[in-house]
Image (cartoon, rainbow, N blue to C red; front, side, top):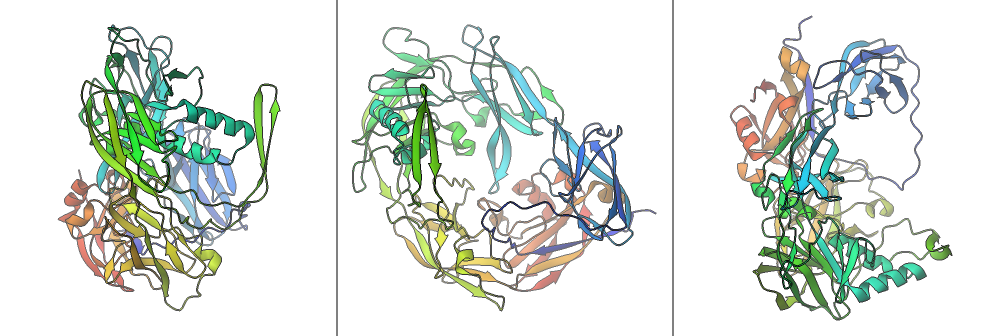
Length: 631
């Protein structure tokens, strides 16, 4: 029978995710016997051929292996909704309904006695990037880390997410495998970390004695990108500093006996930044060769100063130095990192000329339940064992403030000394929780497990710098202090039966409209949950092609200004869901072209043919759609 004219139902509703209970091992479900049958094929997305010996899993309980042509079958299935996934070494895991890596999946719905014999599960092979890395003389560099970062969309803006790394061999050849198909920037991204010798010794002494303060030092080290703080083969002592090349390139000796030269970051083919790099596209099963890098040493300078402010000595504060405009690279863009000494002094040993931002964020550590810690030596090594049970409840938010600074720094060809980095106090958001509706109110233990996120509008949510806030048993919440800036206040999960409606400051919903945090804390915010979410449902008129390729239903604001700076968890942009009241565009497109569905340029293409829908609080709207052809 022709598929022309067939309709596909869809439902769009407010996001409602149950709060996870305390972690417990969950046995796989056991399916009752039935009369349904599922027959299908696992197919290589690049070649269209069946994939042999792939493992197909049904609802986490039954597994079968595909035949030589990729065929599989499940029999005696009960009526209901079933999930199918497939996996094989060398491929990215796939699921039924997934038409691109990481795309959405579809359930297989069976009635009693149903036979589904036309299912296809697509798998994509990993890709790879390979090339050589040489020095200024064309000689191979050995043991150098090369990084590939994949272009993505966060908050409506292009960002880069980690893709993979590899070390060059004795021929200077590197190969980064197991890559998801996509667009990559390849770099030797150096980050030169230094810490005071006194701090390195403090860390080593704490490791030997089991000092609980060592965990705070470890957290600070993590923020600057290292856990190596000793005179090991990967580190060296320079004056009163221990330097570790965490993503490093070798540091040649001074060329003239005066200046220190080192290799700076370089982006393929020879660009100083990701913005000017050549993008390397990797398709399914594709190995991109000849992605070669050549690095040349440049003069380095030393940058030093003192961190001041707060209520006491600014010891062990993590400082990061990153190029201006490199926020889209995340930690990959960091040029240098260091920790302050007991008096608040800091030193970046090797920094190339350029314009930078010096950032420091120190969050207070929450109190944790005590546990018995013992350590004992075995030969020349040390084994540390911990016993005792921490509290199942999340710890309360500490009263101590978050301290932060962001200072622009222009560096030329001479050392910079005497910098004064003045700390500011982080700003908190607090308020209470309200529930609108007749559903049963959640127990206090459930409330404490709902994270309250203070999300930067640019989507760069780093929980090591901005941990989630907490709701107490009385329904009051408070956040950690955060650096000044524009934020959303959101609760990404909700108790069973409830949906997060919004975070209201007066009449303003600051889960949807950014909150400017500048000089003072913000209180009296009301986190509101409802048991009557708005919903949008309807049908999509399918063509033969769209029925075969799959369809993505996309909901996005009618106002194009709301397509940018939406945070890490946009509330009013959904494939199948909308989570705030107001006016919306709704469009159905082929799943194969919906990879960058939050891209404002892509949404602009959809606007002309999209249906315009107005949805209010608690309303149920319906809308029929036709599939748009997007090229």
